Image 1 (cartoon, rainbow, N blue to C red):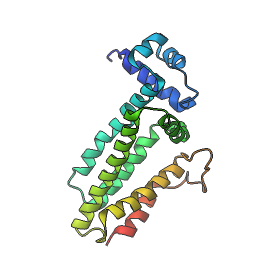
Image 2 (image 1 turned 60 degrees about the vertical axis):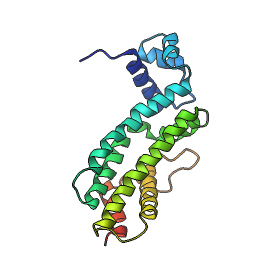
Image 3 (image 1 turned 180 degrees about the vertical axis):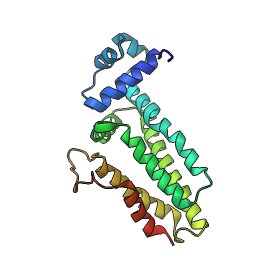
Image 4 (image 1 turned 135 degrees about the vertical axis):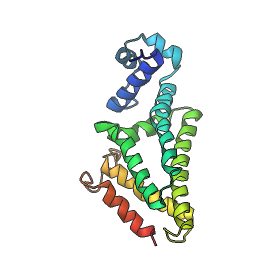
Length: 201
């Protein structure tokens, strides 16, 4: 196994601590201690905690979406692509374990103070997810699998519903907005099939 670089050690430590403690409660010194390096070294690579968070978000969340292209470019039906994409999104979230409830608050807190580059990354993430689902809807309409409706409207409907499912299923509702139901027992396949019943011919 190769030796990890200082940058990799810092990103791993920051990722762990941001999820464990949230953005505001995580200090640079804590990240340095967790990575086993000096505090000054962290600042050599990342001049601020905000920039470090932006890089963690980009490397640990955005980069995972590279795999979405394999789903979208496959020769599968639109229905199968939607099911595969739904599993892909859920699998990405499951990697965060029991700390998922901190993710929305962490993004909102950091997003309020991070630079334009981070806001651009958030927009790119939303745009990437929207375009991914849109391409599936367009294929389904074109191939006669889905109802002949406005593809962008269908995408917003599907993505909005699925996003809310993920928020409830993985206990990601902000503390100020507790979940309205216990969705822990819900099965992804069943929920995805409910969505598909609404758009299939």
